[in-house]
Length: 352
Ligand SMILES: Nc1ncnc2c1ncn2[C@@H]1O[C@H](COP(=O)(O)OP(=O)(O)OP(=O)(O)O)[C@@H](O)[C@H]1O
Ligand SMILES: [Mg+2]
Image (cartoon, rainbow, N blue to C red; front, top):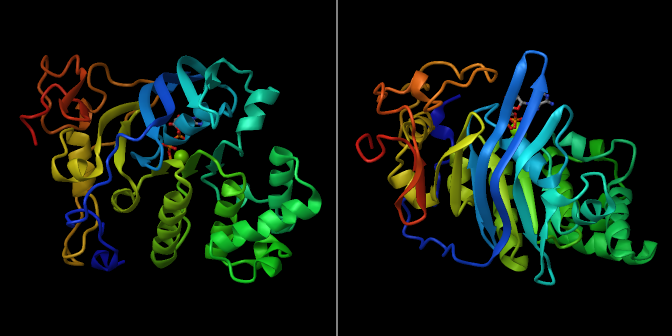
């Protein structure tokens, strides 16, 4: 594919003022750890991740395949698949009534967390089809969610479902509700999935690669839709993707993950303007840009992601880093190098 046909990150470098990040915290994740104990050893899929989600703002989480983006989301929701286990850290939700609830203290199969999932915290899974049952109509699926969480009557849920389908831009919502997932186009299906996620007016939306299966045009339309809906209802969004172009479009703040840890966190414009971690810099160099010629090769990140059973000691990225200095890079601290800009690199500042 000609790389210069790919949409540029429109917001980056534009004069649009960044949105302030100091809105109230809705979800507070601290030192989250989730490990998988397998016969070959232990995979530290999430190894001390901390971040906050803010009302009306979007946190992008980015990193290569296997770095722990989905397991982080699953850990927040208490739906880590076996043999994965949350082995540390806290996740605190500020409820609609203003009280705080520590989700990590709840039984992951209990009633309390089930009343929150799909309701106050909505989520969109990485596999678009796994979010929908092929044997039920869209209407059945959305009204079930509404009835479960609000106790609405069948008719009341149907009215709400139609309103939500209209909100996500589906024409003739009554007809869409009577269709099965396979009868919709990819873009319509993803709108329906977003509609189901938003049906109960969540305060947090966790979206795991929600546009990856779509073509770039449909992706842009869906990203616009999500931003518009966020402006209407003020939800905090955790948006997971491996695509930095999408991050530039949607995120206010970004966490970059590598091998289960966050290596950098920054406001989105700052991350693109002054990336500090060599891994973030390498990701940016590997990103398609408008203006880059089609025949110009993108720079691949050198080396391979190490075996998850044996994370290199010291800086986990050192085996692939062109700036590695033995000794200096043995104990990288996670430190704030500018306001709201954190980086885990001993040489940050020297290597930008
Ligand atoms: N069900 C599982 N069983 C065993 N290990 C798992 C399981 N799910 C995830 N892992 C481990 O956790 C690590 C992180 O996986 P995760 O799915 O969070 O990656 P990701 O960043 O979402 O990747 P992708 O971009 O491919 O979706 C993987 O490298 C894998 O080793
Ligand atoms: Mg994933």
